[in-house]
Length: 214
Image (cartoon, rainbow, N blue to C red; front, side, top):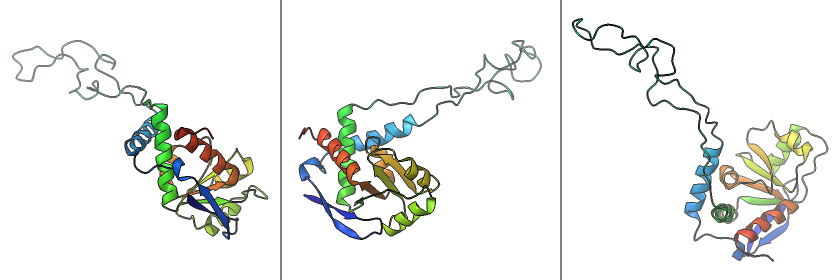
């Protein structure tokens, strides 16, 4: 069993949460993690870069000067890429950078990333993350007490508008639901703080990745 510390919002220990070792993996999944990160970063690319090619820029097809006898290099038209204001040779055009990752590979990648996080002692549970009001200072206090100032991913069971609003102005804090957490999210942040309900959902994802239904 791997044990995860459970704390309250004051950072005081409140027991431990056990994760079955058969749900975790350390001996495989490295390439899958790399592929998942590459796919995630590719998916967020806009792919909107666009340049005008030789046939798309404004200009005449007329030959600037005759082919021979002028002493100058021969030229076909003013839209050539070697001319100022001409078209761009091999320039980018709008495209889709999305990479498809098999479901099994994606699940294995998530399982490996979360296993490494747990093994490193970078995962903790909190009993409750209910805030009295949507104030940034409340989340900042919680992050400080849990010693997660370097960066933290807060995982909740379902969307909490109060928590999301309170955390959105903190540059080193991100809030995600357990269903939406990706492999990239797990690797990106030094610490992962989850509620009990969120941890149950994460264990469900680990169980699915491990091929276990119970």
